[in-house]
Image (cartoon, rainbow, N blue to C red):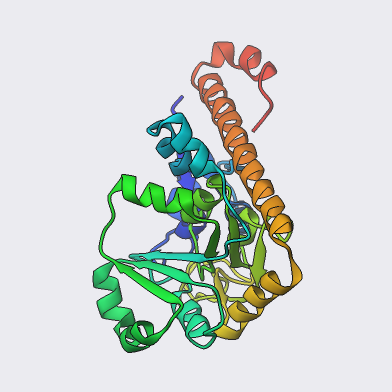
Length: 311
């Protein structure tokens, strides 16, 4: 028996081109996020599940850039890298090549608050020239926004992540949230959006959340408002909407209502959750392999399934 497995995350759900056929053909659908699992289970209840397809929430993991970098350093250099001073407040925002990172709201907030701590803004040059060059003069004249354009090597980017203490990651949408997860692995304090899946990775006890309203873009198949046949109905959506004031209010709250020690404690909780999710993901993959073996070997199915929790 061939076992058909479909791998999905929240990012696949917001694609306009999503079609139901892959879901109906699969025996198992793996979801990296709770949002993905919740929406797909709802979709099967809405549209039917003729194959009795299982939706499995696996969580996920991300390359630990900080750990990789430390392995290449001397003992003293690695110790210096690990010793973060949360009293020295400066923020990091990396947009890369994505328009969905809340960059405009971040810049609008920071450029209106000259008393805010420094912000290092990393963005692809092509994206910056096409989408954010209207900020050029204001960034140049500001005293607290430092612009970094162009590509970085993996080693250089790993160093940026590893050295970061405060990350601004107010995404409008994420498939999984790898750059948020990389910040968690770096033992950093993270501000992200109070919408799924971002708030699955960071909670008020492990960072800070920007108030957001959830909606959908046009014809997103799983967004709740699509007119397409078989599209998911009656869900809140996949897109976080927020303004510069929402970002500013969160930053002000962090700076005024928490101590450096408290922020460090929350960063430690985020790091612990990163490791928990990594172990959880590995455990789910072991269960999946056992399930696939059982379904592919009918004579051994009962024995194998007795030794593995039903996924």
